[in-house]
Image (cartoon, rainbow, N blue to C red):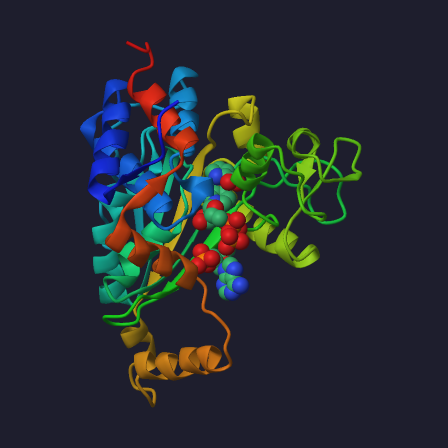
Length: 342
Ligand code: NDP
Ligand code: PYC
């Protein structure tokens, strides 16, 4: 068993990219996938960090993601809807292609949308949100997943864990960003509890008979629950409608039918919206950014923490100390780097 180890972000990204290149991904796919996974690990978002590498490889082995897909930007008609066909590849490469056009269009028109179709999507949404706040835009992102969450009052999986994220730019400072699953937690958290042999907190899931459970295996076989009861259930349904039905892509039930299992990563589309606060506030009193600072300051002034502060603190720690991986995580990386064990 190897020892725990510490890596720079660049070194870990190189290792993860190499694993994907050896698995047959093109450089265009492997680079952005490695970057979001290592960003998750760097920001201490374990449910979307290096633990996801195996899910990506399983999806590849199942033939459900195209490792050398070349995403294509749809013919540009100059309107607010920018569309990228991921051609069955991973979403990060498609986002990298579409984001600059989305940003340009949002600054020009005030609001614009990026539609990504036909992608495998496994990542946290905040890296995409931060790419847009860094360009001075407010942004929202959402996508379905695969059926694993019972609607509020229901008994069986139908909704996905459907993440929703929002960001507001704050000049040179860290943006205001929240990013959450519309289930009580991300499904990755259930799997991490299962691996650690830990029971789930109450209220996360029901078993396959619809009874509350704290057993991760029973939860994975049953259904997760939406956050906030009927309210989270409605937001999750909105995501199915906007980022599934409206963009002509799979809803979570269709994604599960297509994949036949939740053991690999979901396939569907994604919707990302970008807003220019300067354009929306034009002609109105007050600078929107200064007003936002006063408002966010009032939240912090009460001693409340802003979302993403934990992440940004983790990022600062890693900049000083590197990314610490425990012995199990190092062993995982070594096994994936050298699957034959030579
Ligand atoms: P969490 O519940 O851990 O966090 C949700 C958000 O709330 C974060 O922005 C977090 O900031 C913030 N937050 C947490 N605690 C507090 C607090 N006390 N005060 C203020 N803000 C707080 O996330 P989830 O488990 O719901 O989701 C984790 C990730 O999983 C997300 O990044 C999501 O995109 C991803 N996901 C992806 C899916 C996909 O299909 N691609 C599906 C489902 C989830 P901070 O990080 O700083 O704690
Ligand atoms: O953690 O719920 C989750 C998830 C599903 C797809 C990617 N992440």
